Length: 203
Length: 191
Image (cartoon, rainbow over all chains, first blue to last red; front, side, top):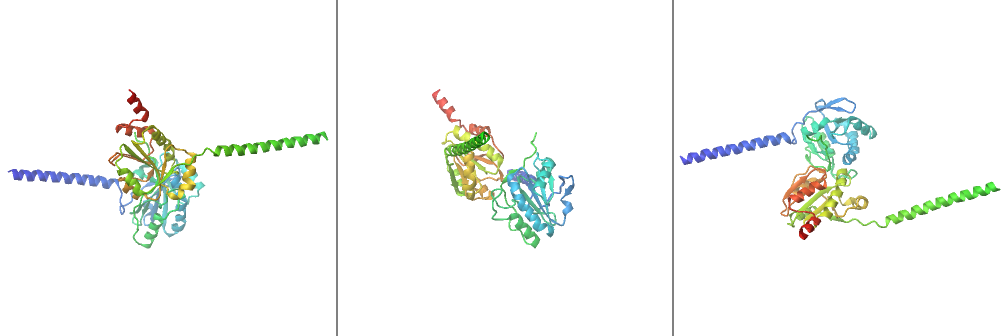
């Protein structure tokens, strides 16, 4: 009798533990995007009011930069992103900037984009909804989406330590090169220094 | 003739005024340069950060990661300066660690600290990526600056701010851990 009781109890205990693990595992998965996961689609307007979605670029490599014209570090990386645009846009690579800073208005982005002659669209992520969806935290933060719409690279633009710093490893360029050559990307996830994405204050 | 005389003296006067302004400006600026103190910058390595967290010193260890290019970091530095002045050095071990690397020391950091004077030393991380820092700090960091992490005497993380802080944010953590400002301590003793 006691033996069956013990096994029954332990069964219940084990199954409860498993249930907790599954629930935690699922909630964790929902939050963090992993390399190889499909990049969630967006439908955001650029500073001229034109809508862009990720799905419209299906079949192309898309480099998404969470950027902020308020952030010196992000501004520092931008000219190099422009250079990458010049080098790779003719090879089927699309470049997109997304500004999620809650205070930045489309006209601020327009002014900055025109002053710095940005050749790629910068979209306004109103109320940082897309940043929340993909859990973007820093500017600049890069997501590279492969031709199948899956995340191939996530992290720093390169390994510089300041806006004008000299990088020793060009993570973004290396990842684009690898994707174009059909080779595996050496570093698929890195971390960047940068500015916090200033989100809408809660409450 | 008289006209010429006036013209001459007027231009001489103007010349003197210009000369006076130039010499005044020169002496004034050189006089201003003199009292500048050399800022205290200590080079620090990743392994040293690991040690200073786990050293088991009495009190709390406060680590702040910052950069000169980060406006909220620069804005909160004076708060740390005040904390440094207000609390005992034996109980509050403050490390303001700049992450920009040794190459910025002379050209960027020194001039910055001459302009933005601080009562406490500043540490310059010679080399280290965010991933490497995560290992020595024993916690995940987003990389968005500023970051402030507080450890207890056992080297256990007790508070992490991945945003700008104010003096009272830090003071409330100190208070929760039974650390009060120096002047308060003295008052308590006299009572």
